[in-house]
Length: 171
Image (cartoon, rainbow, N blue to C red; front, side, top):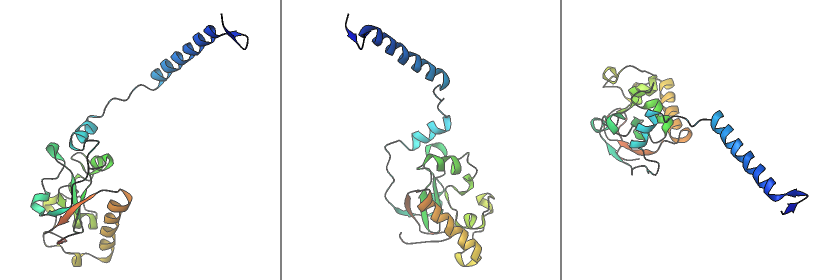
């Protein structure tokens, strides 16, 4: 038998193999694989891992309404003239998706609701609100939301709103 440092190599190989197998079994018992969250599975069907943001384009508010994350659709929010794909990241899907706490903002020009921090249903949002009708604090709040969407959360801008609260002709 071959010896290495006075110990038989076969014995060392058996001990190392046993230790590795034991470590694997112990880690499997202590850290079982997490069950796949059904919400995450639904999100992955809409946003595959290799997905790329869509090129920016103009959106009418009526068209934007279909991007509410329901029935396999993407999740867009309009804010201050821009349209953000907030579902592109899973944390956005959780917050603004159909079951999220901020779902009311989805599929809409949510500028007024974001500015006023209102969670009332979209049907109750004023239709005649404008940037000028907001107070200075509300304008700052809306600017803060847009800054967070762009610079903190990194949601892709997929277009601009051509009508509604804060219409624009381009980015």
